Image (cartoon, rainbow, N blue to C red; front, top):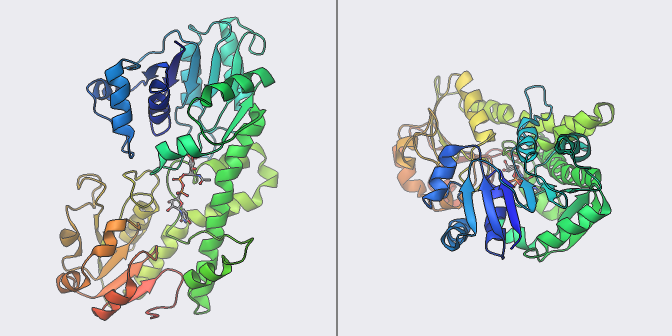
Length: 423
Ligand code: SAJ
């Protein structure tokens, strides 16, 4: 049986390990976090994704998925560790380097080593391969080294892992073919072969495309406000054009991918990436813009009390990393607003501003601020909430709520990117 070590058991590594463990491979899941390994051994899954717990359980029960803190000898090594950015907006490759070093004592001729972490172009060739060469093996002749970026959307990871097309870039053509043959056991989408540096750039292009598109949507929203147009209706109609697909405005871009990856392209070619950098900065200042707008609406309340709903970086996930909701709240607090926040996906101890219920957030509030478009918010009762608030004002930064029924209940509704109180 082919043996695989998956290094890094987060949002990418754990589902990937689970897929291989249930498709005929003997998988060792490696994570340096002892707490995660202990939990996994006891069957407790730390990543919340539809179907993931069941998948890992099957792997654990069959003995085909074994969690441990150290790598071991295997035929295939898959590296799926974090690759964050530093305060200077440069890639922090320390986790990738540490994981690669950890497998050096184990690699043998013929092994396949795949980097899945998102990295600046050239990392597989110029960082991974030189570290692996410390094993004494020739990285092109003795080993098969490839980059195959994860492309799955948090919230739909297992489905996308199977159905999305995949990119595989080899340090050599043989490495690309070996990696393709491996993923083909469960990937039903197309698997495209290229070289490692192209695969790295392709991944960054995808997330940068999305970031720039969201920045454009956000800029359209601010233009729309200035000229009394509803940007949401305008985008819907513009998107009827067969070659137009504008994304949605919002309070900014969060998560650990789209708000990070464009900087890797800027780092690679700083003098030719003004558009990418400018879009990135524009999205980063949306929380401040939203906070200023809220303040301008609440001029009658000297120390406004704000009920913020939604803290995660996007709808219906439990992840608040880099969330624009948190940045918006910080901006509001620096403007002397008091904020009580509720998120159904996070415990009420998650952040200093977190409270245990919608009721606790809205009690005596001057404004209901929607920061994340969780499905469950749509069924909130405006009459009940209106009775608990000091002023019936709603600011919806995601166009997430059924505004008509809130207006009927007496709320003044402001939607980001549209005229104030527009019916
Ligand atoms: N957002 C908007 N407007 C939109 C879409 C998103 O403001 O129209 C915001 C979201 O609210 C969120 C942020 O952007 O704060 C990012 O959310 P997302 O759903 O666009 O992306 P992620 O970070 O959850 O996942 C992305 C995906 N990349 C692409 O769609 C090109 C996913 O396929 C990648 O695997 C993932 O990044 C990654 O790990 O790189």
